[in-house]
Length: 618
Ligand code: BES
Ligand code: ZN
Image (cartoon, rainbow, N blue to C red; front, side):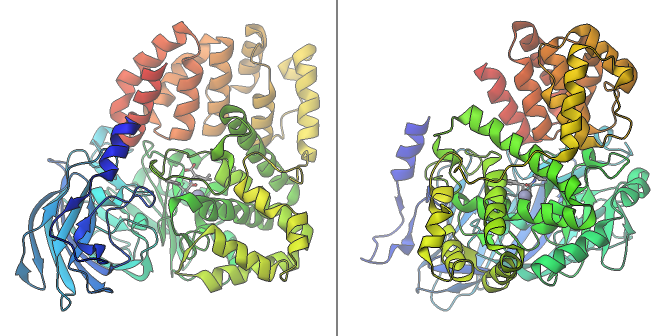
């Protein structure tokens, strides 16, 4: 498979005899930056998108009008597309002939359009295809209200091209205006200025006036309503869960204050959250002005809202300062995870955030164990040349990235580290940023050019070497000391009713469940379940840990609830470990196959694809 891909990468389609030194009339896929676009020569600047959304055909008919700047007098502008049917293209108002390269799995087709020096506008009339990876179409039964269908997008990392022909590379930034026609009675929202009420015509206009990379284009359509939390924050979701969601997320204004204290003023105007249907494939997505999030964070006790702190933090790390290429993902996710913990520390206390750090550390260690300590993907700066950006995805960029910054903070002191962060965001805002740029910045603002200091802290080892340097900070949270002691007593003698767990938070429960031996007896499982009703837990994180343990110990009374969970929830972070755990035994494998067959229609195309691979490989 990889060999074939590599060969295809080498084939370049020459459209015209090319002048020496001008590569702009050759369209080729760049396997290092995962794009067909020629952003070094021509840059798209602004998109005017007029779209009609057809729920019956599950497609979007659209006219995408791009204004662009021709930097090198290039003769062509190259776009990324994925399964789009292109009907007509005009350049500065005149219809032109265009060229599409053969379809590459995962990357799509390059679209080459002839331009001259004088041109600055290209309009593309097209329809999205059935293979689109950005969109998930839900039938009414898959929504909370069960009355109207629903559609949402997830464009990071390189899926925007299946929604809009674009230069789908994070190093380029664009502004957009969109006008979207949806079926009557439905509302559309985007990563832009949003309506707060439905309108009669169901025609919605959007503006994103601050330049963003294309992976931050986002759209959701459904029976969506809005409830404000304060003047600049609020929640969008289906009516039946709007109030509960607003209550759960009522700390957002406090989070915003904490975030601004660290990152500098919030630059995007409003900050709202869309609580998507349960099939949303990930936890959250930092779409500017409107984070998309899974409903599995609504636990009833605000215990899972650090995910919102994370997506909010991306308003600085990621959305202002953006990884230039996907190899630098740790700049987005590591900085954000560190930032998330600082926001949470502000609105709770260190005894709380120590638990978040520890659970994150465990997630990282578990990836080190799976990959192997010397695996190249355990480096912060990874090499995704000739690999899909999703390929090397793990907790490493998040947790190793965050703990690296924590190490720096501890060594230089918080005041100096915070000043660095603030300047890093303001200096690099709206510019594509690389690991190297970040390092130079650290040298200047953290070490004042003192390379000894930098070497002492093993900065280059942290970034460019696999494994975990020996100066990684790691504390056992005080609240876990007690949990661990009780767990040991429970394993040997204590019954569940004698556990002093009444005041445990979600995170103490996670620690307890994660550390229980996978050989726990069925009697002990039943005892725990009877006292704490874990099989029926409404807390998705606790339920997920419990179901993993149930599979490992063969505790069958949990299977029906787990099957229901797996059919309802599409969040990969929960699905992948549960399916993997089932695949460890022949009996579990049968169960996994059965559940997948009936549940897959609920999964996002990307999720279904990944799980299918996992099942086939077993
Ligand atoms: N930006 C990411 C999601 C993402 C990363 C999508 C890379 C595609 C490629 C988002 O901010 C994120 O990290 N979400 C996490 C939640 C977070 C609390 C760790 C998730 O979805 O689990
Ligand atoms: Zn993130």
